[in-house]
Image: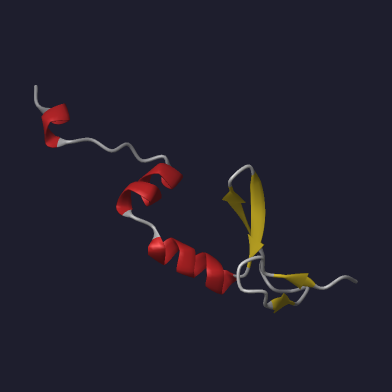
Length: 64
C-alpha cells in the first residue's frame, strides 16, 4: 500500500488516520487533522461564514 502524506506538512498518514479534502484553487489538497485545525484557526469570520453558508449583513440591512 502506498504511503499517503499530508499535502501541507508532509506527515506520513497511517491507514486509520483521518484525511481531509481541502479545496485549493481548482483542485484539492489532502490534509492531516493538525493542518486542518491550523487552517481553520487562520480563517477570518467572513471566511468561516462563507464556508458554512452563513449570510453576512450589516445593521442597515435589517432596518425596516
